[in-house]
Each structure stands twice: as structure tokens, then as C-alpha cells.
Length: 467
Image (cartoon, rainbow, N blue to C red):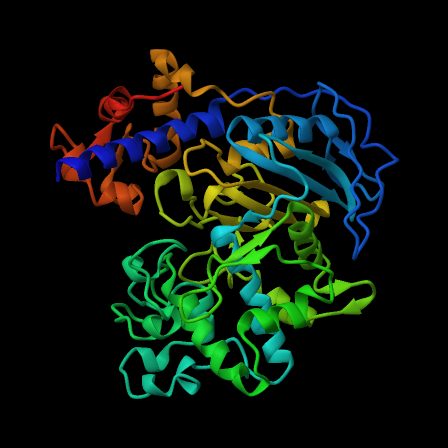
């Protein structure tokens, strides 16, 4: 219990610190020449990139159609922030043109980085392709149609492919036997193990992040593709990646030879961003529609269980939450955007993986941006990176600034302003996120049923921030 409390305090304190980074840090606006007119189109099927010089001022520039796109200076700032936090690559396309490409920390364009959970973003389009090819009826097809052993089960018999892709099937997340790629306790056959895990919740009611749904999906795809003598990875390559010219660097398999569904892919930045551009283009490539547009649009619809997640894609929708549901990864329905980027772009959708591998697609800006990394010790934050990339924020505040009491007080006030709905200067249990709500008895030191500024301040005082 002592270790749980220490970990909880650290986690909640980090959420408070994130509020400062996301909201308090000052923004510097200026003017800057447009992105270089020499920027070359991102050649569909090729891997040519043109880097642009980035000036020291930042802001937004108008496009010919009245929209706005970030400036070259923004890209540089975002790239520098990524590099300081262990990043390997930052690559940006605007309107199909490569406008920024930068590698750091000893890595280069030939580095195929492990995407971890960003791999999940491949499988919504795969199911869409299987619908188009007649192998699946719809996203609402019952899993038990293929997994006949689920027929008759009071809950599993009602799980659909949509529930699996929105991570709302209610299945237990068996982390010990299913999570990761090098855990010694991993099941030999991840697919078969996943279809046997218990189901504890009603399908469609609760969003729960984890590997179980994706490995169940793997078994369904495996059985459906058996007559073609294809694995799910074979089908992904044949149906989507090969037609758009994406070369996979490597893919993790389990002991039984099954490709890992939620976390197996290794791709270079130049290869991975082709996939993002294909999604931005609604499934079209070189004048050919690879997967039906209407099916791909279904992936970007917010799920009932979590508006911040669609079908295998993260969404920047108000009211959404991230994988852990804490304050730093949660927004309210009244907010103008979601937890990925608080200041706007609710049409943004993303693939997000451990090591802070990120692919952001923003249709309204005709922009695809990716960041690759593979360190679990960096302090990279989506909102800070996107604030630099999109809004020209001068620089994120150093975590060392939180040693200044005034800054901590300001962070606490911002936190209160965000979550104190009745403006009584406290955060009640019904105003808090799930993790905070479940720990009130520990954090509420004066036992008044709410957290006030002094109790939130203690979280920061107890947190030891490293260099």
C-alpha cells in the first residue's frame, strides 16, 4: 500500500505539472515568411524529403484557401523539444509536401523504430478492407460469428468487432500474459489465450485500454484469412501497405508465429508517414481508392464509451480521455477540443505508442506530423509538442521551474479553474477524474470531502523532479 501511495502521489503531481506545461507556459507570437516554395511534393511511392530552414520567430501563416498552417519556425521548436526528450525523428507533411524532416540523438532516416501501440492504427483500415472484400459483414458483426466457442456466453456472444476496435468489449486486460513484446510471461499463442480471458463488463459500456481486444481481433482475422493462407500481417501488406509503397522494417511475432496485433510494427519515419498521408487522403493513393472512403470515415467517429477514441484511432474530441484517464489525459464535453491538443483541432486523429511514437493527422490543416522515439524515461507531452508545432509557443517551461513556489501556486490555480465546476475553490469527488476520485480518502487530509489548494499544493511539494 505504501508503494501504491507513493506512485499515486507521483502520478497525480505529474498531472498537475502537466497543467502548467499545457496552459501556463507563455506563448510568443510573431510573423514569419511562408514555408519555402521549394518544398517538394511528398512523392507517393517514393521517400524523398525536402527540409526547410526554420527561423526563430513563430506564428501561423495564411494559405491560399483561407486556412492556416504552422510556420517553419514552429517545426524547428517542436523538433528541438522532441530531441531534448529522447526523440529520434520529426517529420511533417503539409498538403502532401514534405516541409520538415529532422533526426536526432544518433538516429537517421534508415532507422526503423518500434511503433509499439501505434501499431493499433493499422487494424481499423484492415477490417474496413475486409468489409469491402466481403469477408466481414460490417463493423457491427458479432465476434461469435467467427469465434463459435463464444456462442451462448451471456456477454461474449454480444461482443462486436466495433466493441473490439473501440476497446469497449468488457474483456479483462491480461497484462501478464498479453502485454508487451519481450515479457517472459507472454502466452505462447497470444491469439488463443486472448479469446479465453474473462469478460467482466457489459459490451460497449466502458473504455478500457489494453491488449486483449486486439489479440481477439487477431484470432478472428486469422480464421477468416485461413482459406487464403494469409496471416493478418500478410493481408495488411497485400491490401494496404504494398499498394501505397510502405515497407515494413520488422514485425514482432509470438512463439506460435502470430504477428503481434497491438504492438508489432517497426517502420522508418519516411515509411510510416506514407500511411498517415494515405489516411489523410481518405484511402486514395495515386488516383486509386485503396479502401472505401465511407468505411474509413467510420473509424473517426467517437465511441460512446470514450469520445477520445474511435475505431483503433485516438481522437481529439471534447469529453475524451487517454489510456489512463487521469486529469492530464481527460477533457470535458464543454471543452473546445480533446486531451491530445487542448487548444483546438478537434478533427485531429492520431496513432499513439509507447516511447512516445506519435502520428498526428489534422484534415483541416492538410497536415500529417510524426514523432518517433523509443524511451520510456522521456518527458515528452502531446499538448506541449503540438503547441509548439501548431501555435508557435516559444518554449515549454522547464520542469525545474516548478521549484519556484509561485509557479506551483499558479499550476494549482489553473488545475482548480479547470476542474472546479461549481467555483467553490475545491475539487469534489464528482468533479474529479476516475483515478483522483478513487483516492480521495488518501489525498483528502482534512476529511472534508474535497481537495482544496493546500492539498493540491502538497502533491507538488512531495514530488521530486529530476533534471
